[in-house]
Length: 252
View (spheres, rainbow, N blue to C red):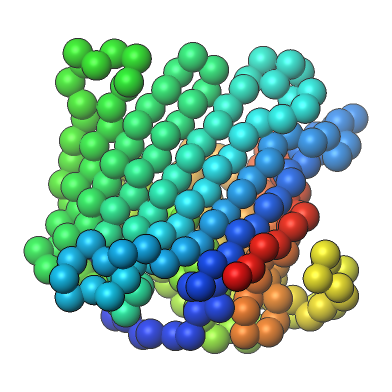
């Protein structure tokens, strides 16, 4: 059994409605700043799934290829993720993912029963409904995230340079322990103005990590105020570097 964090409720600036629009650029060798994808993140309150919950938190994300990238690499992709999170414990309850890469389509659904300590994961191929779905059940305890809710969980944490904490993430039928390091604080130009930001490095790459078959580094820059709005991201791999920048924010 994987033992995850105990919960600690924090004020959340995004709860009452927030939409973030990002643009991703890819650089490699002679390719510099090639627009490759649009990303949209949305956070809302939704009716509670149980009688004891006044509301749930619903996070939605969509990533879609754009511009010259699909023609250059012969790869058109779109992924939609929806996460339902219990707001007091900030523990994920359900994850739904639709992943489209060209003609290949996969539907994934994971449910997280905290009272029983069970994560149930199912993968289906909508193009082949007669195929047997893949299933797995994994034990866990405490607080658990998925890849989307983990971003919002980081935003709830008190941040300071040198701080390290861990997130437990359920993904692909497994639970991963992800160390998160706050590595620096600096001034950065953003669409919100020139602001102090924290650079945060979740350790996603390496043996026994979520991405164990290649080397890389993942960084997120969030505002140093109480909102901790993500304004930039970067994924560095042997294949190249993806720079992700916040282009628009809508709040209610």
